[in-house]
Amino acid sequence: FGLILWLLLAPQVRADDYLAASADRCVILLHGMLRSSLSLKPMQWYLDHAGYTTVNLSYPSLLYPIPESAEM
Image (tube, rainbow, N blue to C red):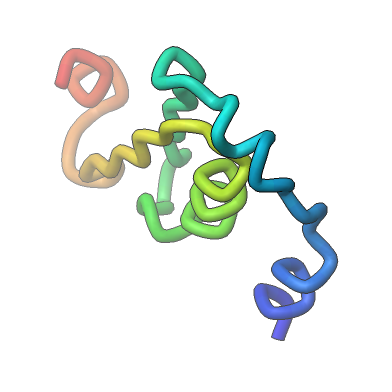
């Protein structure tokens, strides 16, 4: 229910704003510990709709120590 409400209340993007977006407007989304890329999906959808290029990465946050995950 929260996601549906969020999508309904999110600011609308005009077509000319979307067309003005360029590929150099990129946002990299990286989840925290005990999460996955799914937790950032609503933000990814919003940013995509706003004309940004998004990269929503996922990594095995529980399988490796933080320094090893950072190297990956």
